[in-house]
Image (tube, rainbow, N blue to C red; front, side, top):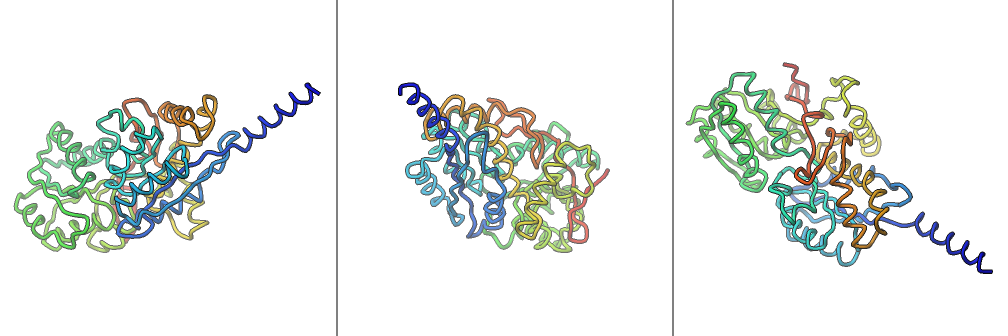
Length: 380
């Protein structure tokens, strides 16, 4: 009888492990002003792994309606009521900045599919719980400066959002530009809700820069570009990866033709060689998304998709040190994510460390432009 009891206990433990569940919260801005980001992110959840090792993954998805206050409320709900082991989201940079302190206090990993590097830099006790699932600004800046240098740019005008996205972009880009011998002769800001930037455009043109860099997102990045064109500006207009979105090309139309953007290769996969390490994973993501939703995914969805890949890699390692739902598991999950090396994702190859919680490099990035309403690879 005792032997049977031991076998029964062992069987129950195996069964418990087999059906153990990791709870992952997801906060997206599926409605409201940031829905152009949040909708593809919410859609991407359907493509995420349902299992990692012997553990199933349950995704609990909420919409914050693009409101940073709701982002905080939902994060608290996911932590206190749903007892999540990790969070993917929120969608917007301001939303993520407001949430990260609560995730750190709860000692629960947060994978932020946002643009600003401010969620992970400078690293501190709070940000060590956050991982950014898009390339950091310095990676994109390197590509932009290389493109500008090849084209002989010596003077530049800058215009970016007056929020963490734009501010961190200037903070990162300016010293790199100076080192490369590019002088920033104008520095302007605008709000995401602005419908006109004529004043800022007048100042940019008045400074006579050889080129302009726009640090905005999607349709919001098209606004300064269009008004620069309307005002007669003839120089090259560069963009961050925030403009690598169909909404940018659609809203901008003919006026954004020729825009120079450093963004993910997944937008121009037909022009990328099979030998490029990220092409296969990017193609799987794009094909799966297109099959399910009838459209190619904007890059915003890639941030959620790659977050799922990071978790799928880390969860089995964390399970060796704790059971899902426990502080031990969440701490081990954070450590396992941070130890990620050579993970090929849809946007590039990720190598994380205690100092770098984004981990992308130039692999997976390309200089692209808009031609006939589509993104195409710039080959020079």
